[in-house]
Each structure stands twice: as C-alpha cells, then as structure tokens.
Image 1 (cartoon, rainbow, N blue to C red):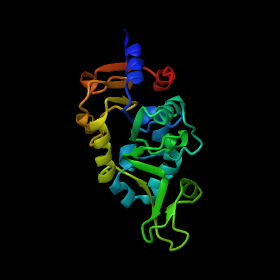
Image 2 (cartoon, rainbow, N blue to C red):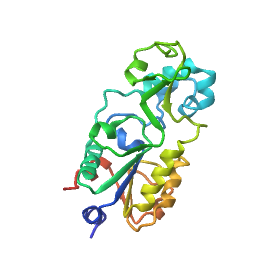
Image 3 (cartoon, rainbow, N blue to C red):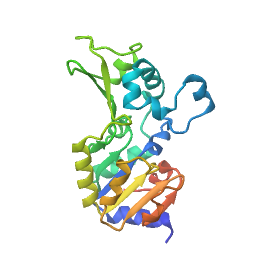
Length: 240
C-alpha cells in the first residue's frame, strides 16, 4: 500500500480527526505566503515582513504597518479551495472534530467549517483600543493611514497575533485538548517552524500522524506518514 492509499484508508477508518494547518493551505486560494519575499517586495518596503508584523513595529510605525497590512494581509476576494471545502465536508460527516489554523484569512469558516481554532487571530475581527467597538476587514480596507473608530476616534487594532505577542490561552488549551484526544492528526501546509504553535504536535498520542507539505519540515521524522504535494490535490482524493 502506498502512502496515498494508506492516508485514504486512515481517513476512512477514523472518526476523531484533527487538522492542523498553515500558510500552505491558503496559498492555493491565491493568498501569498509572506515569507516568500520577492524582488518587487524590496522595492515597496524598507523592512522584512517579520519586522513589519511585530508588536514593536506596530507601536512605533503604525502607519507603515497598515500600508503593508492592507496591501498584503487583506486578501478579501480569496475563495476557499478544495482543501478548505473537503475539511468542512469531513466535519459535517462527523469524522473531523476541529481545524486548528495558523492562518488569519477566515477561509475555513467561509468553506463551512464550524469548529475552527485560530491560533493567530483573524483579519475579520478588528477592535477600537479605546472603546472596544468591533470592525470588519472591509472597514479597515476602506480607511486611509491609521484606521480610527467611527464613534470615539480611538485607534483600531487587528485581532491578529503579531510577532512578540502571546497566543490566546483559551485557544491554545482547546487546541491541545483536541490534539491529545485525536485518533488521527493531519498536519498540512505548515513549515512547523513557528513556536509555540509548532509545539502542539507534542500533545498527539496516536499513531496516525500525517504530514502533507510541498517541502521537508523539521518534524518529518516524527510522522507516521509523509505525503509531498499540493494539499488541494491530495484532499480531492478523499471520497466520503
């Protein structure tokens, strides 16, 4: 039995699957992975993405942060791809219990997934730092410079986890609980290099750990099954 057949067999047998995904799940919807910086990028910005998306940069150069954020992070026309849709199907069929994602684009929810744990927050939630009023991504996209609250004129901050900021404790606790209880853990489209999110793999106790990625990861030797390729193409072969 080859790796693909084994994967499909495990999906068929399992009814407590947890999926943990990263940027590679969304790149197939046309959302760029900001770590793959191109030459054009250097003409537009004076700082690398990891610097711009840090808490200290946000505080010191808020206007420049928002220029990058609107340009690169608000991909509001993106649509769910095959992987998003198949995960929602697996949940509806009672096989998948949760999607844990490092992505902030909301595409899992757009595909119909209900139990989505967003480790790094969401571009669709933004809040006034003065009065707490919530704003959607369209509001941010249609403002200039630093977005201000339409009621109290306070500064609005995206509900996304920036570098140097901690992850939400409740989201982490729930993620750990789902992974610890899973009979099958599928990890897809993540380099497993960003902590503490990458450390979640340590809580899995089963023997059906599947890694799906286009390249090698530091955790490849921990997996029970490794499949290289497009996550959308691989998931399209799951028949329910």
